[in-house]
Length: 210
Image (tube, rainbow, N blue to C red; front, top):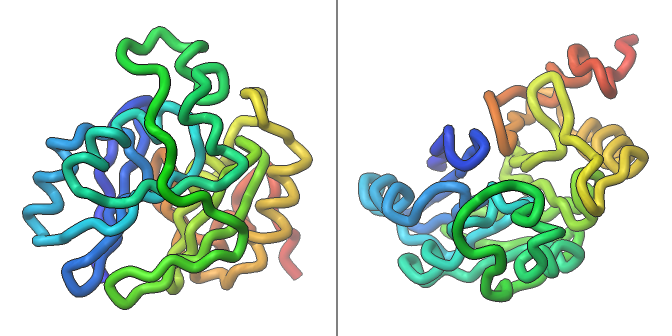
């Protein structure tokens, strides 16, 4: 399995390529289509799905051009679908970012527990509201892509429209911390970590060790 992070994009966001057998997915769209295609061409990967962890502009900004270049289907949780058309929800109205403030509708609206299959891999959708109403994490084998829900030793902010601190607490403690400690966490910003490390060291929701 190939996992490649393209870092330092809009608002220092991460874009991920996950692939196997020459077919893969893109997770979030904070980098240009040209930058992404150069990496895809290097690995000879064809993209089937573009999976958005949530609907904020730094994770969706280039979806239309990337969809056009790859022919992939754009997927977002049903509760964040309106972010693609509403600049107040996607944050474009709050930041001085030039360009389009709305985007074409998603091809697939995701639900909690749904499985997407690509290249022999299964991508499990875990609904993790808190940063946004429709925030998701994506579990692939022992790897989880957490968007802006869980970062290395910190968590996503909850003061944007749709954010709620009690929801993000339930998402992290009830769903993410239920995963094995060795699960590798690939966040929407910053460095990778593990579930075990976050249980021990994350100051927000550190799980007491027995």
